[in-house]
Length: 201
Image 1 (cartoon, helix red, strand yellow):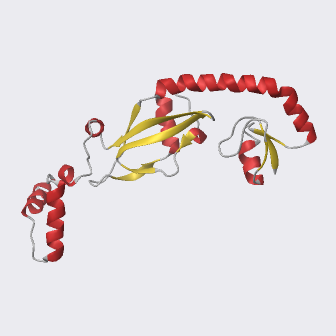
Image 2 (spheres, helix red, strand yellow):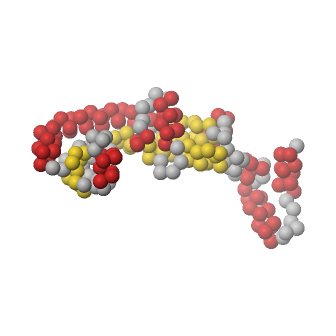
Image 3 (cartoon, one colour):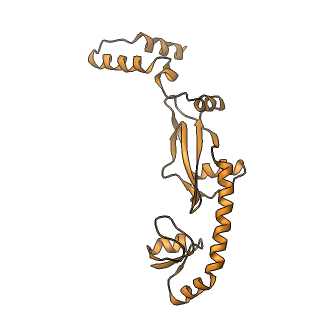
C-alpha cells in the first residue's frame, strides 16, 4: 500500500513523502495512529492544505519531547524482581513493565515508544532507548535487582552474578578450579566445598 507520511517515521521517510509499505503495517499502525494517509489524489491535496499546520504541530511535539528527554537524561530506575543466585530472573521485565515504572515516576510513555526487542531476563543494569519523538531518542538505565540493597551495590559497579558474589571465591580461582576439575575427576575444590557447606548450614 502507498501512503503519505504525516511525520518522519524511522526507516521509512520524512513528512510528506509517499512510500510503499505492507498493508498490515499501514492498517494496524500507520493509519490508526495518524502517522500516514492512504496515497490518493484527495489525500495528497488534503496533506498539502494542512502541511503548514502539521509542520507546526510536529515542532511543538518535538519541543515537548525534548523537554521530557532532559528530565530523563542520566536517570536510572530500579526494578526489584525475584531471581536465582546466577542472576536469572524467574520472570522477565518487558516493555509494559518499563512503561509502568516510568508512569510511577511521572513520565507518560507509550509501549510503542520503548525500544526493547526482547524482555530482560537477568539482573544487572540495562540501557533502554525511548523514542519520545521521531527525532528525539533518549537512553535510560534500568537497574534490575533482587532487592534495593543489591540495586545499590550494582549501581556502584558490583557484579552480583560473579563467582565471588555468589560463592565468595575469586573469578580466577573459580576458573582455575573448573579447569582442574575438568582434567582431574578426583579434584576437590576446598573453597567451593566450604561455600556449599555454609549455604547448607
